[in-house]
Length: 145
Image 1 (spheres, rainbow, N blue to C red):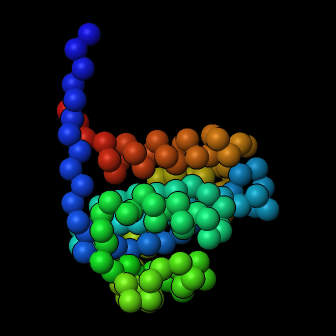
Image 2 (cartoon, rainbow, N blue to C red):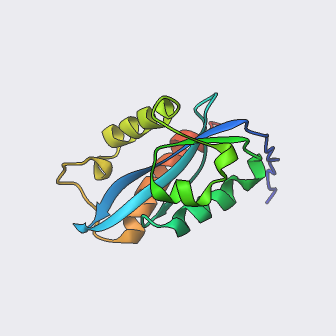
């Protein structure tokens, strides 16, 4: 069987928007967060992490973003961003995070598990992460061959 090999080209991203989005597994007490980053200019998803709302999740996202050599990060004022991002490369405010907030609105509309009030929810963390991850991979990274 012949394998089709595709090359991956990582480009430098000047500016990125970072945000996190709340959801839950089983009950609202078992919170799960989608941490994700997009290119500020194009709106393309750069990386995402499904994890608890902790500094460790942002650290994991930062590791995924390292190859892009991002020069400037735009976020809200969540404490993890203030603690872990270099202040010289970090701007806090809603004016520069409009694209990622819009992307979250689209995700909430398309994936009912992310809606704030819903009867659709996951019963396991694995299934929750799989559904959201498959959706993002298909619609953000997937291209018809």
